[in-house]
Structure formats: structure tokens, C-alpha cells
Image 1: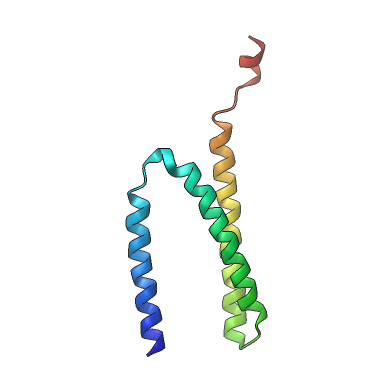
Image 2: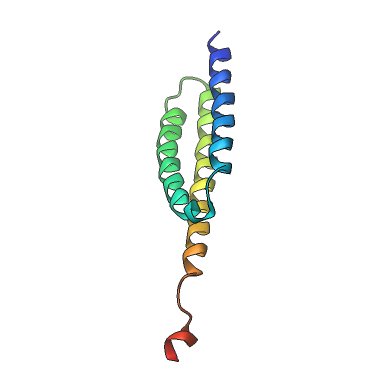
Amino acid sequence: MDIVLLLTIFVLAMFLGFEVITKVPPTLHTPLTSGSNAISGITIVGAIVAAGAERSLLTTILGVVAVVFAMVNVVGGFLVTNRMLQMFQRRDADRRG
């Protein structure tokens, strides 16, 4: 019975997340990426705890997979944010002239 409840919450969270993300205006993407990186950092901590709990082999494997996915999300988020911020920096030619 617990698995049905967890799957229901997961599916509802997916639909809610999709609806929220599609309604975000483009001007808010950079601040949301920064917020997403912070949330992914919290996810990394939880995944490390899950991986290190050693309750079973499955929880350890899922914890390691969660750490990898969260790290990819954080690194990708920082790369995207950095690239967007570089678009607003002056070029060397602009500073000389």
C-alpha cells in the first residue's frame, strides 16, 4: 500500500512541476535556475544520506544514482547560468571604444 501512495505523490508532483515550469516567463529563468541549483544541493545531501544508510543494496544503488543525477543537474544549471550571465558582460572592444 505504501508504494501506491508514493507513486501517486510522485506522479502528482510531476504534473504539478510541469505545469509550474511551463508558466514561467523567460525573464525569471536565471533566478529560477539559481533556486533550482540550491534545491539540487539539498537533493545531493539527501541522496548521500540514502546511499550511506546501507539498509539494502537497492537503497545504496538508488542513492548513488540520485547523487549522480543531482550533480549533473547542478553542474548543468551552473553552466547555463554562467553562459546567460556572459551574454550581459561587455566585450573587450566595447571597453576600449
